[in-house]
Image 1 (cartoon, protein in one colour):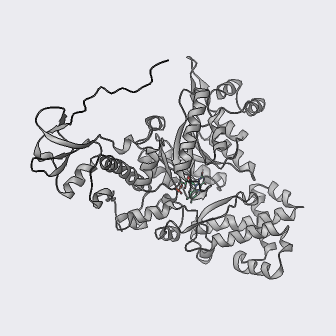
Image 2: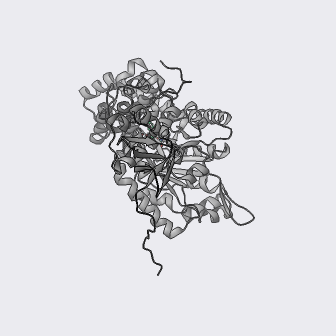
Image 3: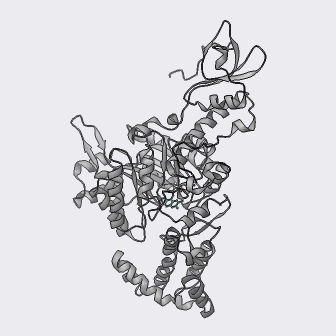
Length: 544
Ligand SMILES: Cc1cc2nc3c(=O)[nH]c(=O)nc-3n(C[C@H](O)[C@H](O)[C@H](O)COP(=O)(O)O)c2cc1C
């Protein structure tokens, strides 16, 4: 067996620094400047007068004359954080991705803004009708002619037509990257998307045209995406002429996802898991399955949930994340497809101002998502609706006084009138929903309640004034952490927040903190002002 022990043949003598004394910084301001140059190395020395100073230049020597070196850190600029193959595959400058936000909250403008800075945006297609998704796709393709972007492909267990329709739309419109989310297992639709993009060149290499970034928070779900597509699904797709026999064969040799985003406690759908516990588990699972399948390009693991500051970004990278994903923080940015009211409210939020509430799309299954609890009553009201749904089998079973209260305070209309609106709504979108509820009063009740849960986020996005208490605003604790970080800076004001600038500061800040932490672990003690990365505005921005 090969000798696996490490060896060290280096020089253990102290290092010396040779350079111009003028290159050394001693004041806090000058030191800050040197530390900020993350694309250059940084040396901490003691000069002949015993003062501790910092330099980005000069040379280290093992012997001879020079200043004694106390600590060193190599260059590590923001563009080096994360996995280089992630940057290369998606043609990015930063291993930074903005997550999809439903109903176009992650708007075309948001995706374009982040894409123009060579970071990866994901369009919030969930909940939108095909015509609106198509309109957004056209805008993104016009404004990002060469850059990468993703569209959200969300699993829809209750309305399967939505998922298959989205895949069809994406295939027809050359969408090359999807952010797949809310999956519990694989469906034929997502397998279709993946396999339909496979081809083989003359040398026998497989080319993957349709990339999948799967967002997961459970090991079981991650496993499905880390394995090749199931044979039965591939065979079924071949039988339906949706993919070729060759594509089925190629799909059997590659994983379902190129990238897996581990989603911890986040805004929207979440299992409220902690990233520090979940990320290592999924990375280990990836390593084990890589041993089994020996994929040419190992699946990369990214991190989402709770990331909105330089410190949280750095923590994720240091735990092995190939890239990071932000969500909540982007909803408060000017490009987000939401209302001024919501943006303004979000700038005041603390990390404890969030709660879990029933999700509209998987209401019957008892699935919850994380929403804002400050400035709205949506959370408690939605929870009450779920209680009624569990307690009663039809709306007629709800005691009269309670039903009247519901109709007056929450629905602002008789429930039967709401039902008529549901019929009209689904007739255009998915008539089967109504057919299935016809002789099933419990289902009818669910659809009525989902009317409220569904519209409540539209009221938030539109800033509907008389519906402020009913606004459903998806939000995680990351929002409060961001507000804490930027308090006292230009980014405190929501109108100064733009997605690419926020992303760039998070990444620059992570690179800065990497440097600080490395030097601290070698014994350097910094004054607290140097331990923080404070975002400073770029000159071209117009501020309020
Ligand atoms: C307003 C909002 C809407 C969201 N909608 C979706 C969605 O439609 N599809 C999806 O995959 N993720 C959705 N997410 C999750 C984000 O894409 C992202 O993974 C998550 O917000 C990251 O965690 P964070 O909120 O702690 O930053 C949403 C998040 C927010 C805040």
